[in-house]
Amino acid sequence: MSRPLTHIQRLATALGLGLTLSLTGPAAYAQRSALREVRTTGSAGAIWAVSLLFGWTLIGWGIALVWALVMFFMMPYWHIYGKQNLSSEAYRTTPEMYTQKVQAMVDKYTIRTETARNMPVVRPPAGADVYMLGRLWEWYPALELEKDQTYRLHLSSVDWQHGFSLQPENINVQVIPGYEMVMKITPNKSGEFSVICNEYCGIGHHQMIGKIYVK
Ligand code: CUA
Image (cartoon, rainbow, N blue to C red; front, side, top):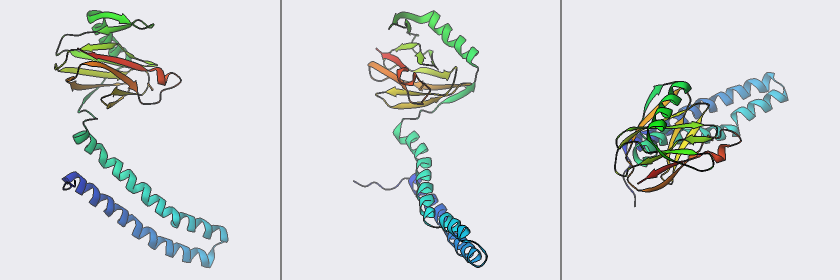
């Protein structure tokens, strides 16, 4: 089952090959002239250093470069075809401003609390702006959304970088203090979804689990 390459794939391949070749050529040339120079004037140590720099490590650099380029071009690819990285808007904010917005929603629409932490479960009206906040070490609050309704989901952190990873859907968003990310979501399956943190953020990282209920 082979499919013709897309424009992006063709472009990525051409760029990757082009860059690798254009870097390997000059490096191979530089190796020869540098070695000649070092052999006539330099010490054994210098020869060893030049050989190391331009010799086998070059292959390692080449592989690393190609891999880096593959990953670089996979980002737009995953965005378009993988539906993992949602299209989002980003705004500047502060931890105080963002906390206020989240708390306003929590005060207005909390329907119950759960777990030992008394985590509020918030059910905003269909189509509303909904907020989730990442902090050491929780996603606050839990959300309850209606199936097939579209919401604007806002995300930010009030301390440092966290990763919003919606499971089992595998939607991933970086959550960074100072920035408010907004994305449109339309939950199309009902059930209980977990938000795990996939950016290591300290001793309680593994306990940073949030909830989104879809009914
Ligand atoms: Cu938050 Cu890891």
